Image 1 (cartoon, rainbow, N blue to C red):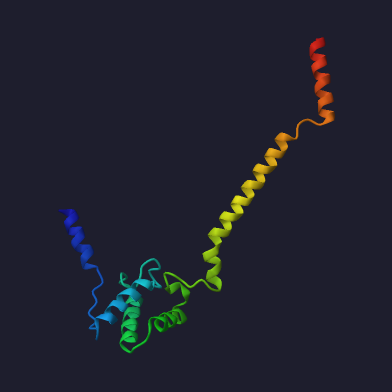
Image 2 (cartoon, rainbow, N blue to C red; image 1 turned 180 degrees about the vertical axis):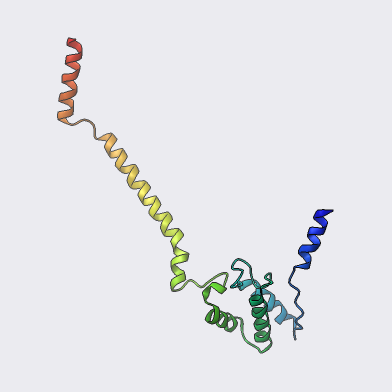
Length: 148
């Protein structure tokens, strides 16, 4: 019974949109863009799922821009100009975000290089054998052991 009440409570917190779109295409674009845009306050929720006041404002701006005829690129450019690249879930691979896109690959490559260098140096130490001085000392120790 408690689980059922909890489910109803969660449903009551859901975002309810009451926008009337002039065409089904605009409504589909609205839903796609609202999934693409991140809530600046919630940080890990898109504006479609967030109840934060700023997310409500972003949804309203999105609706108004779609109805005024703005393209998806124009809307995204406006949102990025106003809220920064963070507002997009999939930021462009350019400028400062390029480092974020490439960092995992570069770190993995650096780790592989370090591992190979360590393995190579260990193999070289093992294959080196004893120097002449070490062999002489070993021989002396063996002779002393046999004499004793």
